[in-house]
Image (cartoon, rainbow, N blue to C red; front, side):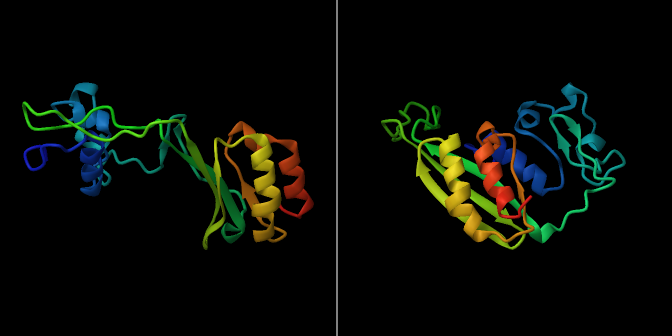
Length: 179
């Protein structure tokens, strides 16, 4: 891959290996021997070999769904945020030997946050605002943006972001007949 594309990044190499049915991380791609120095065998990395993993793996260990909860998937609404910050810029680049690598970098500090709900049928309640999400903004999002798009009986799923635990937002959700 490196001979074919000299500026390939480690995460791009890992993505191409994943497409070829091999499980690999950028760290595994950085080892000259493909990861065997870390004690991995070929079966550990293949999707269909004898040592194939049958469950997704998280940092806390294997996730098993032997007895999934009784949930109605079309009623699930997953809420999450993502942000874009002008402070994020590539610090390294590639150029021809002997030439300077020049690239533009944004100046100033600005963060824009995007919050939305994801249903089985698609996205709902998109909301964009300046700055990071805090408890007041999240409570306003739930009350004025999210609630009008949901129906009684829907199940709102939140991650462990501290602003999701504000009591006011939970009260609004439960008052609407949602879980």
